[in-house]
Length: 256
Image (tube, rainbow, N blue to C red; front, side, top):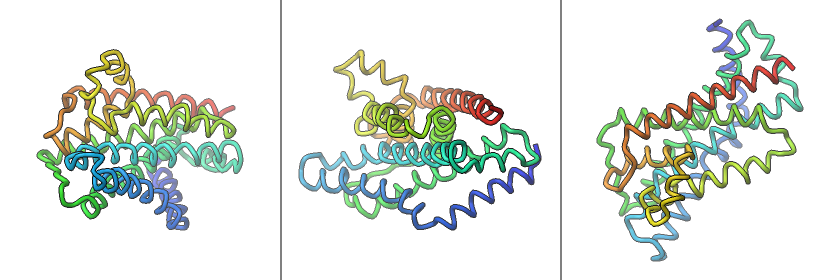
C-alpha cells in the first residue's frame, strides 16, 4: 500500500468536510440532540418515563447516532460518486490498491461515527441532569466497544453504498435501518424482551442490538445487559463480515 496516497485521500475527504462544516455539524449533532431532548428530557420530565430511563436510554441514543452517521457518511458519497459525479474514477487512478480506496472511505466514516457517538455524552450531561448516572468502570472496554460500533456502521455503509441504487435509497432506510433501530435494543435492554422469547432470539441477528448492549454495559453497567464477551465477539464478527462484503461489492463496481 502507498501510505502517502492513502493519507492524501483521507486529507481530501477532510478538506471537503471542512468546506461543508456547517451542514456536516447539523448532520452530526442535530439528530443526537433531538433524541436526547425528546426522549430523555420531554418524556421523563412529563412523567411518562421514570427518572432512571435517562441513563438506560443514553447508550441506545449513542448507538443510533453512530450507526446513522457512519452509514450515511460512507454510503451516500459512494452512491453519488459511482452513479452521478463519477468522482470515484479519479480516486481509482491513485497509486494504491482498489481495496484501500474503499478502506479509506471506511476510516473516514469511522471517525465521523465516533464523533457523533461521543458528542452524545456531553449533550446528555448538559440536558439530562440531574438524574443521569454514568459509570465508566473500564475506559479501555468503552473505547474498544465504541471503535467496534463505529467500524460496524462504516463497514455497513460500505456494503450498502455498493449494493443500493440511487432510486432505492429510501427503501434502504425504511427496510433496513428503521427495523434495525426498533429491534436493536436501543430504547430498552435485551432482557426486556424476556416475555417474547422468539423475538428475543431473533433480535440477536441485529448488529445494532450488540452495539446498544455494549455501550450500555460500558456506560451504565447497573442495568441488565448481554455478556461483554458475547458483545465483543459479535461486533468483531459483524465488522469483518460487512467489511468483506463491502470490499467485494466495491471491487465489482469499480472494475465494471
